[in-house]
Length: 86
Image 1 (cartoon, helix red, strand yellow):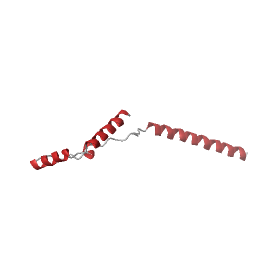
Image 2 (cartoon, one colour):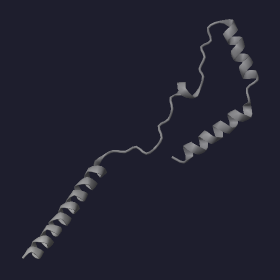
Image 3 (cartoon, helix red, strand yellow):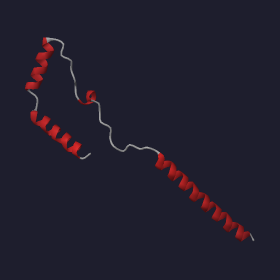
Image 4 (tube, helix red, strand yellow):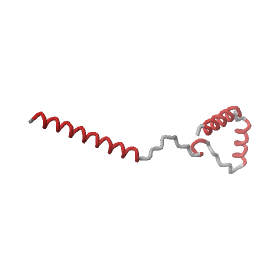
């Protein structure tokens, strides 16, 4: 008699665990998860400086004259490759 009760308890525990696993699975699948990275805002990616005076304009033009165009091209190409993968 005891052995049958033990088996029944084991079956009951197994059934409860299966039901719990199903409930947890349903709950997890209902949750929205965004696995894609979020794009950074333009302010965090680029140093946007305000031009308010002639000296600011001269500094900005100087920076543009000595900018590494090849680096810009590489970054634009990388962005285009990343965008095409979406």
